[in-house]
Picture 1 (cartoon, rainbow, N blue to C red):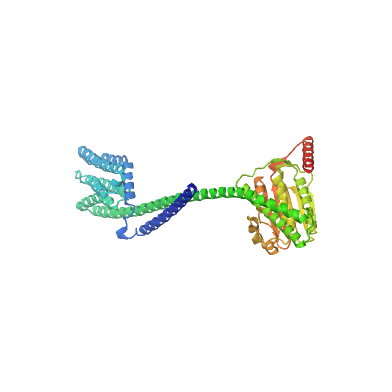
Picture 2 (cartoon, rainbow, N blue to C red):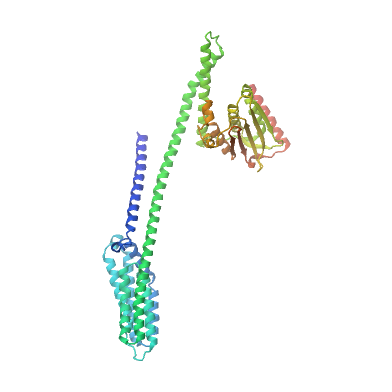
Amino acid sequence: MGSLSSEHSEDDNFAINRQRAIRRREMARFARNARSRLGTPENRYSTFDLERQHLFADTRINAAYAVPLLALIVAVISLLWVNPVLSLAWFLSTLCLHFVMVGISHAYEKAPSEQQARKIWPWRFTAGDLIYGCGWATFPLLPKPVDAGEELVIFQFATLLIVVATNTMQSATLPRCLLASTLPTTLVVTVCFLLQGNPIHYTLAAMAIGAQGFFLILGNQLLKNTNTMLEYRADKDHLIAELETANAMSDEARRRAEAANIAKSRFLATMSHELRTPLNAILGFSEIMKDEVLGPMHNKNYKSYAGDIHGSGQHLLNLINEILDLSRIEAGRHELHEEALLLGDIAEECRTMMNVRAKAKSIVLHHAHDGGLPRVWADERALRQVILNLMSNAVKFTPVGGEVGITVGRTVDGGQYVSIKDTGPGIPEEEIPTVLEAFGQGSHAIRSAEPGTGLGLSIVQALIGMHDGRFALKSNLGEGTEVTVSLPSSRNMHFSDDVAASFDTDRVRQQRDVKSA
């Protein structure tokens, strides 16, 4: 019951993650449709209101000390034409209005998110900017001497441009604040110029109005850039959320796959015992009947049936062994028992073992290897299984009277390789990936109904990979197939002659003990 409940909870979690991903995609699609309407007049500023308010407040806070410096410079220069007391009063009043705006921005940043979403904040920002703009607008109204000259006019116009540009940069994210902070100064300066009645003043008044229009256009472009930046940020956040969801689903799928792999390994381990027990009885009794150990069988059909039963049981046992070998390797439970070996000797032993099968099909086995090859540090059983699997495939698919060559030599990088080449029908190029997969078989094997599981090459690749080696298969249709397995140079062992002789003596002794046993 516990396992069933855990499986149900896993399925529920997986389904919930998928539903979340679907909902987020729908929300992203809705957001993109809403943003596509940003260009329409009625919806131009309907999105990212909170984000733009944050940017507005953050800009005001960052400029908390830059604006007083500008006001101080204007006040000091104005001392050339304005009474110092009036100039100081204007500077202090402008400074207070500026810090009022900074205080409003700080209050907004510290307010909870639910209060920041209230409609009152845009109106507070607009009112504060209007009062702040009026503070700058009072500067041209300060009393000046009649003979101030053109220098004052130029200074007032330059101050207008700087103030409007500064307020445009600070208030571009909120269009109403932009108008509130720049329009009072422009209107006052324009009116003052028009009241002078001189052509130069008319020109400056026209330029002031043009500058106001230019900065409004600039502010609108800055607003579009801000919206685009916020849109990209929202897309990035959405993508991160999608990646987190996909990562969670991937982790869950990987965990489920690992659990399934463990369950598969346990199932195979259990079934191997359950299948091998009756198979041993089938093989033993069928062999006794086939060889007529307990007496002759007068019906030859029964004897043939016993041979078929023994052959089928042997094939099934080989299939079970190969599946178990591959499952142990994939589960990382196959341990290598490494020792110093001569690759050429193992290849020669495998050739001797396959000689009987080759003679049955009149296949000639060729064996060649380079002299002076050092020993390799490897698992003897694994290498023997690799070479036997490759030679078995070569003999199986080579037609009667063909040839199979076994070559042992050095690789270009100093390692050692074993190459097995046959004169069989070959493998079409498009079928090679299929042949290399587990349970994969080529079209020739299917047509000829050759017995096999399709696991031999998978086991070979896995065992060679555990030795840090490489596997290569080359085949031309109608010309044969060549399979090469190689071991890296790091597995070469270099011993003195005495040590090598002791290895040979131990190996001969072990072989003699095995034969006597």
